[in-house]
Length: 167
Image (cartoon, rainbow, N blue to C red; front, top):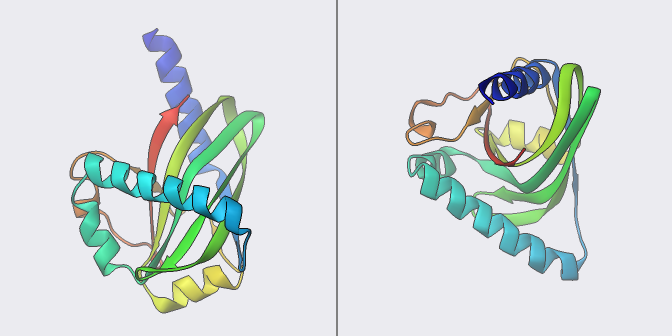
């Protein structure tokens, strides 16, 4: 069992090291799916804050953030991930957003996770809103644990936090 967990960890690390994320922002959006997505986003934020209360300070410091409550990722050598979420500027909901990720390298299997991308500056948020946002391997996602957000640093105006759900 330890060997399997090690291999899965290695595969996941490899995927993070070789991944590229594109996100698109769309507004307006379907009201029916908006209500359900809002509930999922609120629940995801509560889970992140419950796991690490220090992330509340990151919410306060950030100019905006995108919450993806359910991101599904799978791959065999070549992989991908997709998730839908919501984009906020301060506390104001701007609309929906879609995360698409492609990865290449040593990987096998699948997982689901939640992700929050924080934008430190209005310029970083604007770039995301214009669809010119790419998150390369130089920006690493921080797995949320107690106290992880307290020491987190923004890299080029962006900080990313993830929480594994399944896989």
